[in-house]
Length: 358
Ligand code: ATP
Image 1: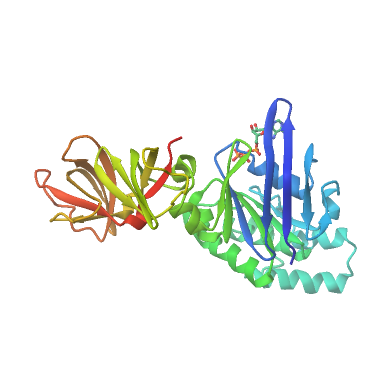
Image 2: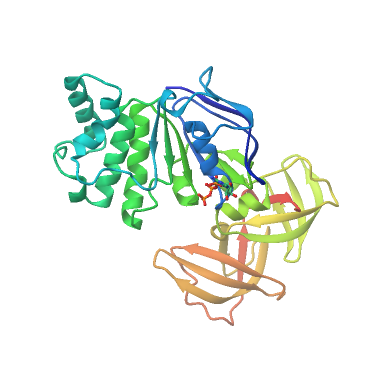
């Protein structure tokens, strides 16, 4: 198990600055995600860690060892790509054994380790099957076993689930996390899928245009984004422009077009009374009630609704007429409410995030 350090890594392709002085630390045994929109530099960073790109500037350390200029095959990383790159006409066991044969490991040792790797991804007993006879999910497991069998110093995963259907993707998310934790592997995982990152990561970095915008645990980046970009990228939210009106040790009050809000979450000590800011409130943070509540409450009407069984999604028009809000209600009670009836949406100060006005 090793830690991994990236220091001020910079990589360009011609005019394109793909990585702009990226620094991060991944702890030993951690599952660390690189998340961001298409073209933000995730794959370039992963490939630099694997050794396929040499950066113009900066260093990569595996533990204390500087690997920045070490060729890929000497880094001892296990890789798993979107296209599994398995040989379809070879058996499962042959596919998994390949990396060990390259290393000229003894035959009986290969058989033992291939068996172990297949057991760890729950494919024990299927070693003699041909790849072409496997389902997509099973092929994915073989690809994971092939990455694990060489006992990598860290596991690098590039959109490993993007070829799978939604149900298998869900199943494999859990599997990848289980296998990494059971094997005590440090893993770096690239995706543009927020849900995948939130459900599997220990921590993650959100990238945008070659820069890191935020690093944190799933809860931190979802509940306490540090910018409009991260709040927006991590999920649905309602943004309200506002002005800070008061500041006290536990919170801040912000005046918006929908009234005053008190906020505890995502506090940024840089806010001062009079500052312009942006309030972010996620749709599921609102509570609907027939009567008004004293704090952070907006009167309005449900104008449109989508019933989804376990929850309903509402388009809520504030009585002031100034704003619409997206509100999600779990175990929906208000889904049949007439559009004429006024209801009250309120939010706990812990769920109100105050962001810089950028
Ligand atoms: P995606 O989610 O679409 O795979 P990404 O976040 O992984 O995107 P990268 O593939 O790292 O993004 O690309 C970062 C930037 O570098 C992009 O602007 C891309 O066009 C550019 N780029 C990446 N590889 C090359 C290359 N080999 N030659 C030229 N430009 C490249």
